[in-house]
Amino acid sequence: MEEWFYRYLEELEKEFRRIREEMARIEEEFLKPIYDIESGALEPLYETEWVGNEFVVRVDLAGVRSKDDISLYLTEGRLSLHARLERPVSMDDITLFRGRRVTEYRLEIKLPPGAREEDIKARFRNGVLEIRIPVERKSVEIKVE
Image 1: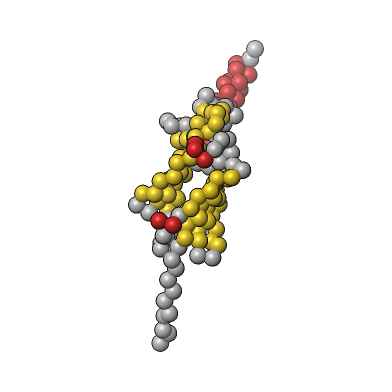
Image 2: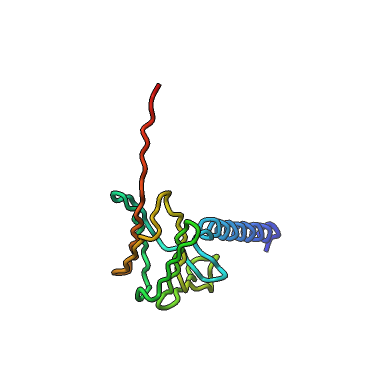
């Protein structure tokens, strides 16, 4: 074949390699904060909302069998969650994590100011962990001059 054709194929191969590297970089940039490669821990989906004087956190723990597989810790104003999955989940569809498995969920949430740590309650039902954090809210009137 012609030399120009081989050069064209080489350039095409370089471009495909560049695209694969860029895709891997993008996956790492967007997914690394939610997945710890060394431990196989994934940050679960969660939502927070204020309900009266309670800060409510709902965490989706799909694949967690029971409340016995969940650990909640309170350390220096932060709530730490560790939950073991019933069975590992493969991450083979994501280039960066090919050959990796998710074995647990991990989440850390900063408590709001005024949280009454001794009154925090948690309930696990239907794959969702609900954490209710009572908060003492203070309001101060500010005089306008």
